Amino acid sequence: MFWKVVGIVAVVWIALAVVGVLVKSLFSVLVIGAVIFGLYLLFKAMSGSDTHDVTRL
Image 1: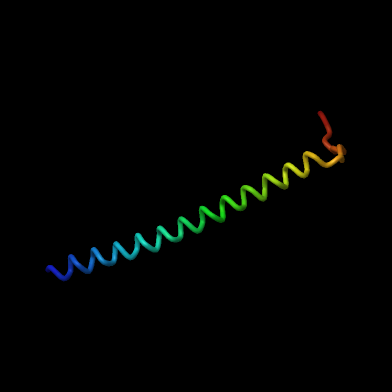
Image 2 (image 1 turned 90 degrees about the vertical axis):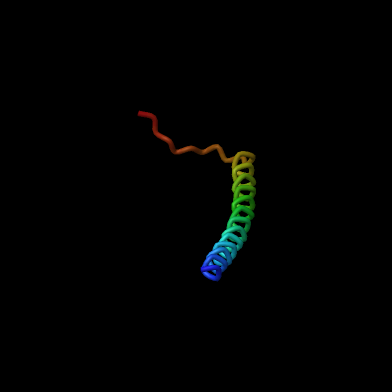
């Protein structure tokens, strides 16, 4: 019984470590993507093309 509890604790600990690394990596990718998207929007806002093909009804 003792070894089952130790095994379950070890498996949960390893699973949480893996999930923590994945969340940290995905957060970094999310931040980098948000910065790139913001720079893209800033570039589009600063560019001089004011041609909009929006038709008002």
